[in-house]
Image 1 (cartoon, rainbow, N blue to C red):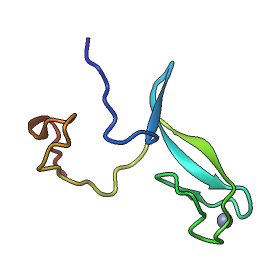
Image 2: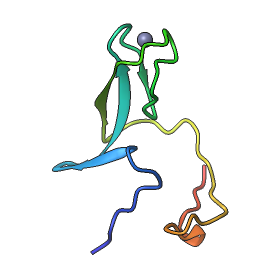
Image 3: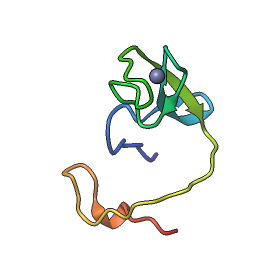
Image 4: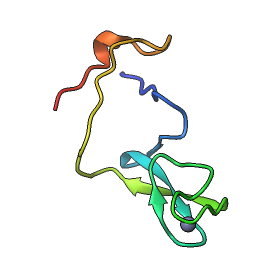
Length: 81
Ligand SMILES: [Zn+2]
């Protein structure tokens, strides 16, 4: 069995349908941001509601990790575009 190790806590949660990304939805203007931030980037509101983005989407950008962080082996952390 393969364990899922998040690069950073709070980026996604496991559901019965698999992992889903977590975003923050502003309670004032409704802007959705990923990853979750403490304040809305649009209006500055600090009341942010956590919402699930789902398990499917379109990858617009990727980053290649060249260094481990103690828990993540860089040899298994590379990505290609
Ligand atoms: Zn807002």
